[in-house]
Image 1 (cartoon, rainbow, N blue to C red):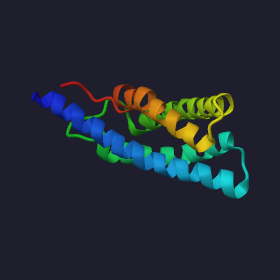
Image 2 (image 1 turned 90 degrees about the horizontal axis):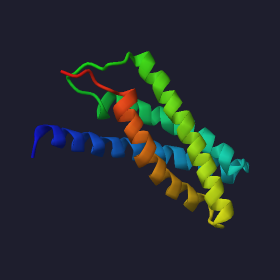
Image 3 (image 1 turned 90 degrees about the vertical axis):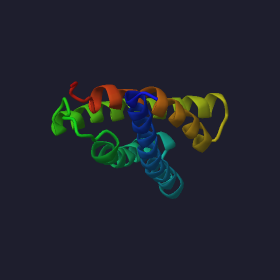
Image 4 (image 1 turned 30 degrees about the vertical axis):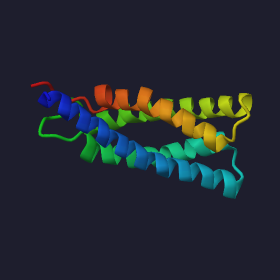
Length: 138
């Protein structure tokens, strides 16, 4: 197997671990605020999204996308871009969960898992790899 493809697979797997850990923190926070404090799940998604995003950013910056090569962006630039991705991710998760919960009559916790899978793979990973943590080419 070509080295670049193996490296891409390893980065993808690390990103999934990071996403899973951030997602668990995000999901538990959402359920906690919804079930304990009776906050509407769409607001709890935003709260959980922020907390989970901090976990995800720190893991991605220091482990997933770290290598011997230099980053194209500064840490501040990475953080700013990450915040833009996270805000859009939260919007997609909240609106998607709301739509599935209300129009398909599913429990918000199940709707959220469905939407998380779609947003995580189709939106977050791609933008983090290609835009937020983009590396300088050799």
